[in-house]
Image (tube, rainbow over the protein chains, first blue to last red):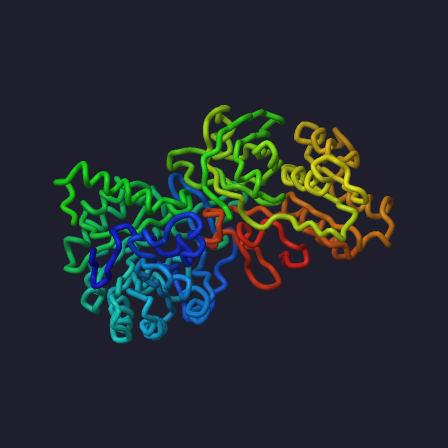
Length: 291
Length: 269
C-alpha cells in the first residue's frame, strides 16, 4: 500500500523509540514483514539521555523519560543504516532537534541515503529541555520546523504530533500547510508518578511520557479529529496491543498504524497485530473498506 | 540468542514469607543460559500490570531441560506470578543480558548475596563447581545476608554446592548479627592471605548500597569483582534505553550490557 509516497508493505509499522534501530528485534521477528521500520529518534549530536529511573509502570501503561538517548547522526549512518538497508521493508527515520536548522540538517543528510524512504519529524518528545514538544505545542514553531525540513529534503515527511495541546487539528493543519505529507499521532501524554514513601518523582526527571493501552481512547479521538481536519494521511499511534485496536484506529480515519509499547511486552507484537487485523478485515469486509 | 517462548510450570513452591521457587521446562533456556543472565517474564495476559518482570536464573539444568527462578513478591506483577499453578504455561523472553564471567585463572570464588541477591549465585556456584562435583583447586565461599531468619532463603540449597556458607542477619536471628559486607571483610582479613587476593574473585548481587560497599572493598583490596545490578526495565533487550547505569564510559543498559558488570566500570553517586 502507498502512504504519502512511501510504499508500505502493510499498514502495521513500528513506533519510534519502541523498536530501537531494528537490530534489537531482528532475532525475534522477520523485519521484512513489517509495514515499515521507524527508527528511534536521531539527533545531530550524540545524546546521553536522562538520569535513571527512566521507566515507571502505571495502570495499563508506563511513563518513560528516556531523553532521546542516541549516538547521533554520524554513528547512525555508519553503524545502523547499513544493517537496516539490508531489509526490503521501507525505512522511516525519526529525527529530533533543538532548532529548525538542526532538523533541516538531519533531513538533508538523511535524504542522501537511498535506503531512507521517509522522515518522521519528532516535534512531540516531552522529555527534553530544549526542542521536542516545545515545537509541537505551538502552531507557528511547528510550521517553522516542518517548512525547514521540507526545504531540506524531497523525501516524504511525516510530522509526529503531541497530544499535549488544546486542539490537535490546529497543529496538524500547521504542519500540513508547511509541507507535511502525512501526520502521525499521538506521541506520549505528559504524566507524573510520585513515590508516596519519599515524596519525590518515581522518575529521574519530574515528568515523563505516558504510553500503552491507557492512552488509546485519547489517541483514537485525536486521530478521528485529525482525519476530518486535514487532507493528508494520518498514522494512528497509541496503545495498540491487538488487531482490534488497530482496526479501531483505521475506523477513526487512520490509513496506517504504528505499534509502540506493545513491542516491550510481546516481541512478535507487530506481526501478530497484522495477522489479527487481516483476520478482522476478512470477517468484517464492510466495516473496514481497506485495500 | 534469546527467544520468546511459552514454558510449562513444572513446580511452584513457597519457600519463604513472600518467596517462591518456580521450576519451568525449557530445553532451550536450560541449554543456552549462563549464570547471571535473566528471563523477562510475562506475569499476566491482560494489560495491567503491563510490563514483563525481569527475574534472574537461580538454577540452569541442561540435562533435565529445566530452569528455576527464585523470586520475592514485591508488587502486583510478582503477586500474580505467585498464583500461577503447576501445568500452566508462562511466556518467557530469554536468556537475556550478560552474565558472570568465569575466569579459569581464579581459584577462590567469593559469592556475596544480599536478600534476593542470592538467587543468581546458586547457578553460578553450580557452574564453578561443575554442578556439585568438586573441581580440583576451585574453592567456593558463599556469604549470605538477610533481614532476619525468615527471609534467609536458599541457605540449605546453597550448602549443596559448597560447605563454605556463612550467613548474617540484620537482627542476629540467624548467623552473625550484621550485614553481608561484614562477612566479606571478616573473611578477607582473617581467612584469606593477601597473597591469594590475585587468585580470588568476588561476585555480588543485592541492594544497591550493598553493591557499592562491596565494590569499595574490592577496590581497596585489589580483588577482581563482578556485580549483578537491578533496574526497572521495559523491553529487556536493549531497545527502549529504559534501564541505564552510569559507567566510566557513559550510560550502559542493565538489560543488555549487564546485569553483571565489572565493579571497576561502575560510577556510584
